[in-house]
Image (cartoon, rainbow, N blue to C red; front, side):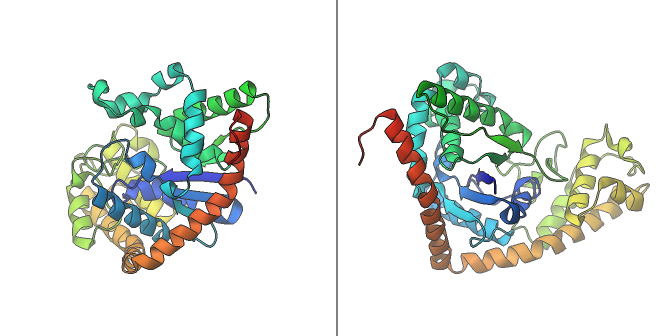
Amino acid sequence: MQRVFSGIQPSGIPTLGNYLGAIRNWVPLQETHDAIYCVVDLHAITVWQDPKQLATQTREMAAALIACGLDPRRCILFVQSHVQAHTRLAWIFNCVARLGWLNRMTQFKDKAGKDREAASSGLYVYPNLMAADILAYKATLVPVGDDQKQHLELANDIAEKFNHDYGVDFFPHIDPLIQGVAARVMSLRDGTRKMSKSDASDQSRINLTDDHDAIALKIRRAKTDPEPLPEQVNGLEARPEARNLVGILAAISGTLPENVLREHGGKGFGAFKEVLCEALVAHLAPIQGEMARLLGDPAALDAALRLGAERAEAIADPIVAEVERLVGFLPR
């Protein structure tokens, strides 16, 4: 089996976009790949986090991942900071990666904004930690969206430079794994922007914990245009909000946008939004119930995460120890 690795930040309750664009697609990989997933709390603190809130959100994210279908018995699921191999390898990669490479990372520019001098050094070098997350397990596949491809390219550059500098063929090449019918769910307020849990407006997203009333209100308020739904997919090309809502219903229903339009084409958005709302509520209800059950027993959730960390360490520690030997560190 090829080894697949991915992580998600505990920066808030996962959104429908996180679920449809990433988490749901991780679930079948448990059956076909050696799957490793983690809650990346080390990445989260590249910007300041309230300590109590970070701890709460880390548990919430872990519970959400399990509720969405990740089975700690069939995959490895853990919290990033619980496995020291990540930070050990990240420091070595800090010394392998070149400043010019990091200067090209567009996400740092986006996240740091206009006042780059006030950004943390962790935010600047976090692509090196991301490379360490993957290569500590010698993973060869990473489920990514378009916005993460540049980081994957950097991880491969680091791996190749390490292999070259130390005269070894140690780290493998990493390939992107892009899946999913609705790989990119957009904001309910702006169909040209990705749905995000960090958006200032809660009305822009569906959170996995939103109840029926919250979902209904957000869907009814979702931005649309005055035209009825088209009957053909090409009629969505210049209508980003319509395309987004049709894509969401298709993904939730396990079908294609063509089939959604075959049933709803020519109708107004009022009736369509009611159908979408009911589909979302029905689909998310079991996830919400399981998430509540898991968070009701934090000791059991923490125990499952500790077991996951032990399994992750069993893979990563020998790999990183060999990297340290190749670098010339004395054995511990």
